[in-house]
Image (cartoon, rainbow, N blue to C red):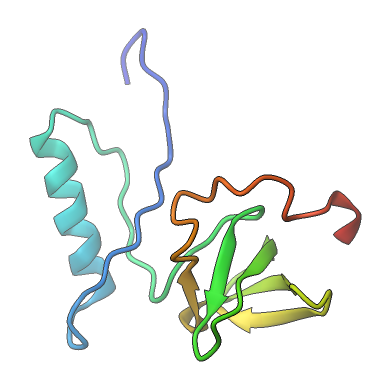
Length: 113
């Protein structure tokens, strides 16, 4: 890093063939970023969708979005629309197709913690 630069983490979820390795996908995304004049400091592949607290996801097998309250190693704590809080493995999550940029305001309440 040089003067006038700062680090920014961008989470990108990509769909890959069943046999693809997550690290290979991370390398391809990093190559694409470098080709657009970005300096990639670190790239890692994770199986499944890696959400951030405050975003919305859809647990696979349902059509109901849920708010991500916290993300741990291998799982996320979700608040569902009915108010129920459940822990779900990361490979069981997909981005919310109705809010892919996670711009829905106020879905996560701070009193959940």
